[in-house]
Amino acid sequence: MTPGLDVGLLLGAAVLLVAVGAVRLSTRLGVPSLLVYLALGVAIGEGGLGIRFDDVELTRALGFCALIVIIAEGGLTARWSLLRPVLGLAAALSTVGVVVSIVVVGVAVHLLLGLDWRLALLYGAVLSSTDAAAVFATLRRLRLPPRLVATLEAESGMNDAPVVLLVVLLSRPGGGHPWWYEVGLVAYELGVGAAVGVAAGVGGRWALRRAALPSAGLYPIAAVGITVLAYAAGAVLHASGFLAVYVAGVLLGNARLPHRQAILGFADGLAWLAQIGLFVLLGLLVSPGRLDAAVLPAVVTGLALLLAARPLSVAVSALPFGLGPRDQAFLSWAGLRGAVPIVLATIPLSERVPGAERLFDVVFVLVVIFTVLQAGTLAPVARRLRVTAPAEVSEIQVEIAPLERMRADLLQVEVPPGSRIAGVHVDELRLPLGASVTLVLRDGVGFVPGPDTRLKTGDSLLIVATGGVRDETERRLRAVSRRGRLARWFGEYGDDRDA
Image 1 (cartoon, rainbow, N blue to C red):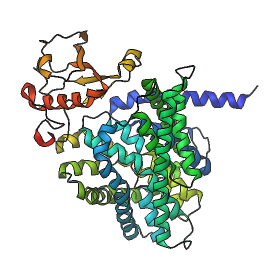
Image 2: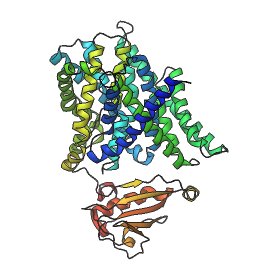
Image 3: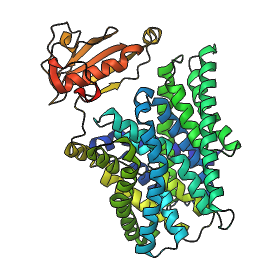
Image 4: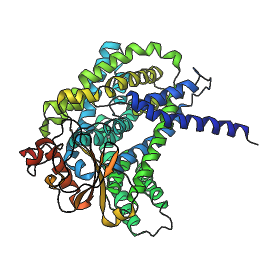
């Protein structure tokens, strides 16, 4: 009865299932999944199956919707205990660092590519935002110190807000307002956006704790709905909706909510769906025939960003925080770009800024090239800079009602080669009261350990820790992983720097 709808559903379901299967393939091959999704979009577009799609306004609208979901998931899964110490640095990277990056890239492309100043600064603004989806998906597969991971994730969640404002301002016809008015407008939008996020997060947390919803499945929908409400309320007040989403997500994600694990699982699945849809749509929008001419400008712009703009923005932002040179170098290399710059490039395209079509093509090519270059080398770069963490703890999302009633979390610890946890007896871990090793998986066989069980390389440990001692448990495990059974109650690095 509706053949057009049936064909559309068939094609959409096929693309979705292929994209889901591609996640496993991309993990095995070490290729970022976003490239597979972009390739799918190109394959079904005008250069492949011949489907022509050039609705920039629709792409921009759907792209913003996808970013809302992705940023909300990033906020919901962010740990406040890890985020709080790096909040100042992340805020500096998202404001001062963004300005430095825009200026450096703008000057470089103005001089090297001969672009006028407005378009050159637009290049810098569009490319100054690190991508939340790329950062969240890539960093969580690496063994890195929590401080670096938290900094990069917080930066990618926070910097979309000022960047969107700056791209919109640069895309408008000039001569409207003096510079001090524009600065005040950005400050207003960020300040009010943060306040809206706090109000939505606090109010949503209060409501979800006291609501007696008839089905457990309604709680995840309500939680995500609150983050979307934060965006909409911010936008209605002409404030930064993206910042409101992230702040609301952080406040909700760190609250003891009913069915919290179900909320996080639902948000994770929704974010994957948003990523897949967004990347496929952007691949569908691009015209492959125009990309050849964009390769050289993309390489020039990317090198200016990677070798000059990003390192300088990190160095300037990190000045007040005493960040070491190795950490700064890794932060510089790990500033991943993904779908966000491509979505931002649709703003000047929809505003019909002269040169915007070339800007979109350059950004698309740059994201593809430098995503392969950066994401594929993050692990060896981390090892080279010696910023790896050999035995980091990860949370397992398990829907277990007793854990919720106990206010406990289920943690997983791997014992990789080089970790000094190997050879330590379970009782020598000296975990705090309220934390216990409940299961050890060794050579594919699981068993309940005793106090005298000696841990070996390759073991996987499942640890139940109550909410009050979770952070203390993680600090203890990091100390033992670096100093062995004689480690005292040191901090993240296993020495007295964090005592």
